[in-house]
Image (tube, rainbow, N blue to C red; front, side, top):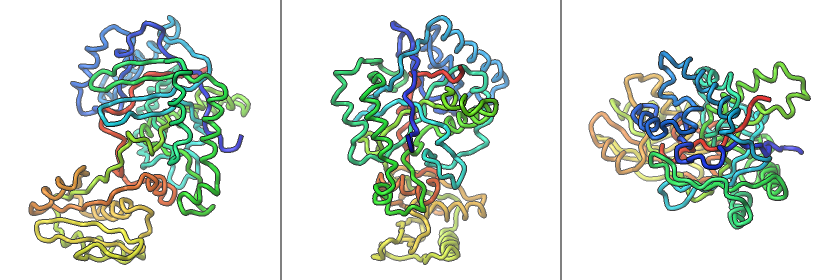
Length: 436
């Protein structure tokens, strides 16, 4: 079927009786500067079956014995499959509800996504694309973990833009008809997660039909104010993009030795991911402000003005926010001067892309200037009032604008938004085979 990017997978879960509070471990790309977190995780797990033994925390990625660590991971994967620690369920999806301390749970569906529909290179028109730039140098060391692995565990979260909440949310009215797959506390301040198994059938058909409807060109153009010149974007990778890029790189190698028929259903072609509606109440999209240190504020403003004018925009400093429709503007604070920096006729779809592009150009020419990304305007103000510092206050971000930014600008600038603090990231629970 056209524009179908998902597959109902055969998910693997630990056998009945496994202590899931020890089995589930947070995404390997978290706490990379805190080895004590992972030491405590190791202590908690002990000898119990755990995804800690199937993944490589990236805090250890540069260790001298990383090769032997990876070899142990591969052997443990094979052991868990052979001794029945992991069992394969019938084809189906998992409906998840994760409480991690906020006012609302994060709700999602675990499915397999087609890596043939995903591309991370700039300018891609694929139906699944990253929200932020992919650092290709991060892929090779992660690829070594995947090469030789017989299964994968997902911490990828993929966003959809479903403001009417037609796809995921109605399923929670039917949880009584689904079997509960897991219901466990998560270690190390991770909160609590519940998962319901949805067997392949009319409910999964409805899920996939709802996802396909996101590709309707007329609806898409109306939603984002675009034309057929802009590529469709039903799926945006919100978390775990480098893991997905690694899965893509692995699949590209695997498929070289396969016929087109063999490629069609090969397990390595599909990656497990949690699909989350960006309009889920748990996803708080707050502006991330910019603070610069060791800087001459007047030089910065002059440099930015010149940069934007060279791009065909009108840029200037004002005392107040402009009334010009479509202008992007940023209140700023420094020890010497406060005001509003204005860019009219911006080339970029969302304000954060406009300002960060200019700042990146300035920072490339001023290596001694440091930038930090700050939650909370009051913190930026207190920092920027000190001599040699400068702060920009960024506007609120509409959830629709995140997709709009990727549609029009390719990827979002770094630090555009966050899908939660470290302890809120996805924990490994499900697994899927990637070899036949």
